[in-house]
Image (cartoon, rainbow, N blue to C red; front, side, top):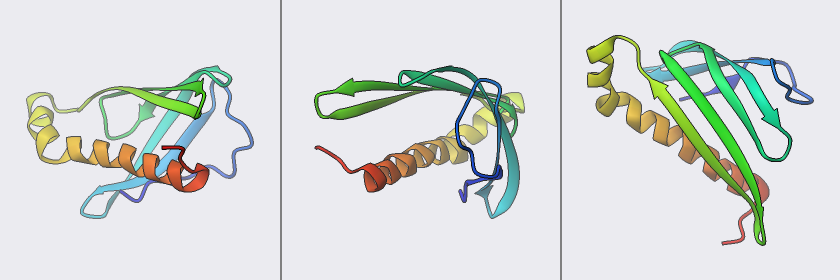
Length: 118
């Protein structure tokens, strides 16, 4: 989806920071997405919520748990598409796969950057 961070380098995240992204989910059409970090507990979790973007609602919790083999990351995502029943029609056709691909990409990138103990 060509997801790119618009912010300059970010030294640290904090509650209230707004992150801007550009993405191209369909046919190279660029969209802007702004999310706010609404809650952080260091080394445990943080929550981002869409302020403006392609979803009617996007609420994403990132949870971290230390294990014997490293850090386990769990995502909880709640989202809703705009346009009522039309959005619901588009979900299985376009959106569901794109959301899954976004998290699969992040999973693969984390393995590439930090390795795996599987």
